[in-house]
Length: 304
Image (cartoon, rainbow, N blue to C red):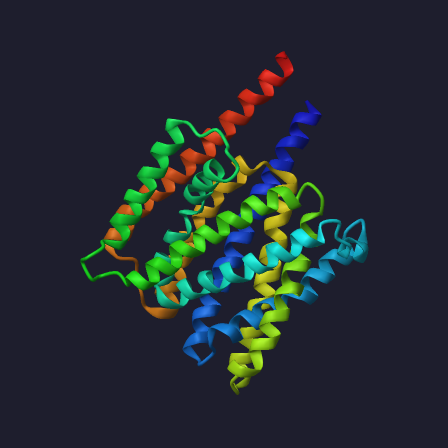
């Protein structure tokens, strides 16, 4: 009885951490738009996001059981590849936030499970039944509802950037499955921030601008919220399974809508309200089917 209660408490804590991560990362997106409105460019935003996050990650690492020894990676080549793909994906992710209203950029980010399913089937040769393929099709129908191609009401360049970002996030998710078998999550977070500073540091002098104190404060806060968001995101997966915490990601649409309204006087279009539930339902169904598949595999392994 006590063990069951402890497990339930751990899962609830994991869910709480995921909700906190969603809030922190939604705040990061709002800060990105604020920084851009005050004259900061994409390279500057990425540089500060990654650079200012490193002390946050190191501070968290120092408090863990392995301390700063967790910096050591046993999959460094994988970390380099992950950082290269991750920083490219970050450029598309932040680009979508800059090109689109927050709610629309967030809605397109919900397509990650769809692309993860496609990549899992094509690259990893994972078994994918008609249930999940049906959810993939439904998800893309939701995208068409939101973007309304040909209507002119939705920036198609922004839509393309947002969907490309989701593809990169899905690729990174597949990479993290492999790296996660060797390195701790906090190790991966540290090396992603650190390694991405190499190309960003080389580019920064060519794109840096002088800013007032408030703008630099916004840029620094991006690193703080981004670093804390990654830590909370990582902590959530330590305490609860993906199937339990993944649905919490959809709460980001609430924060994106709120920030868009309060800070930029922008509300989602009617088509976003129609299409977003379709995309969300598609993602939730894919996660649920994956959960069912893993349970069936576990039962078969026990019976064998």
